[in-house]
Length: 98
Image 1 (cartoon, rainbow, N blue to C red):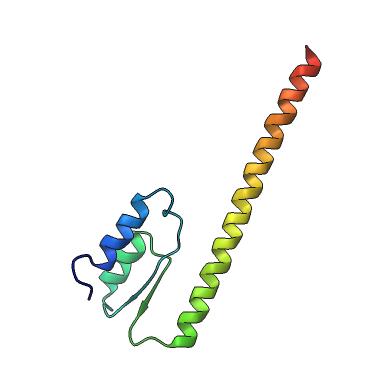
Image 2: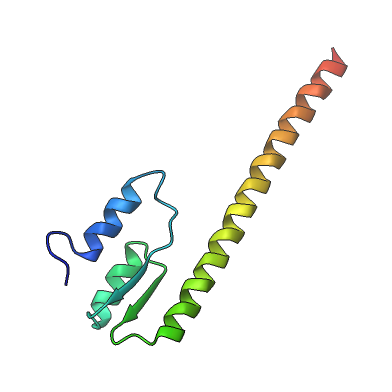
């Protein structure tokens, strides 16, 4: 249990910041009730691990989330590039027509 802010408040603060919004958050907690897990996931956590933790399991989950984040970032960058390319070509076509 954390003093001052609990994990839910920390997650809400992260999600409120545009430059931190997409960071994957895994809850590692002593709270094991279904309501606690559902609340964490509904606030945007990507996973919920209860104590006592199994290091190998936690490491596997962290690696999976890192790979997923990298794939999302790559896809986002590719989409931005393709968007810019479409705009460039449309502008080029417009110049040719005039």
